Length: 192
Ligand SMILES: [Zn+2]
Image (cartoon, rainbow, N blue to C red; front, side, top):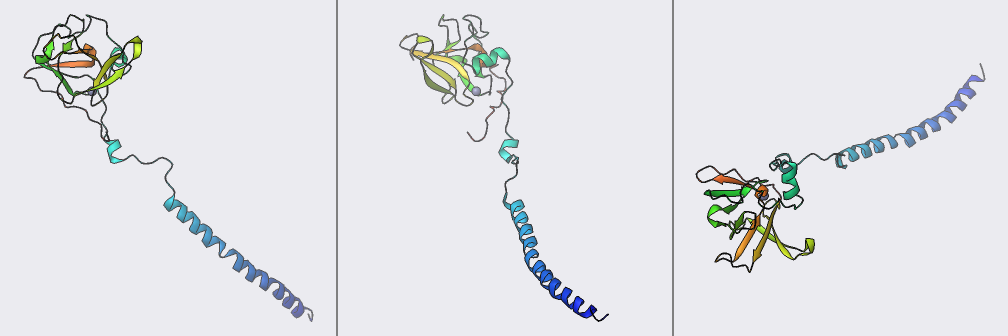
């Protein structure tokens, strides 16, 4: 029994510093780790960003058939004379088949004999022109100014009309809306 106090004292002397050091060395680590974890959870971007308001309300263009997509998206050309509007004379408006933007008026349509619907003017601002040197020719491609869908080509210097301009447009790139009928609302994607 007489050895018990020194043993207890020894144990205390050994264990007290360990306990203190352990307390001192471990205690700061835990809060720091928690702080880091908290900071990370507050500042790290989520792995899948939540869609913005604009993205969740982004409209889709009109769905296209394979043939429509081949012409409008891949810049194809429908067979001459095969288009539904080549020889049409009805009064109305031709809108973009993909996005409904009004492109041409029937008043500007004329018979060119080329096999495709022809117009000597577009609705202001509706059509964009781009140089096209494919197929060994230098031509001016025309696309819908809104959705960039391919329409056809525009030619000048032929003097077919007083405006000396022939928009040679694929019927399948357009949809005709008869005069007096309500025009569909253009589909405009935000952020453009
Ligand atoms: Zn369009």
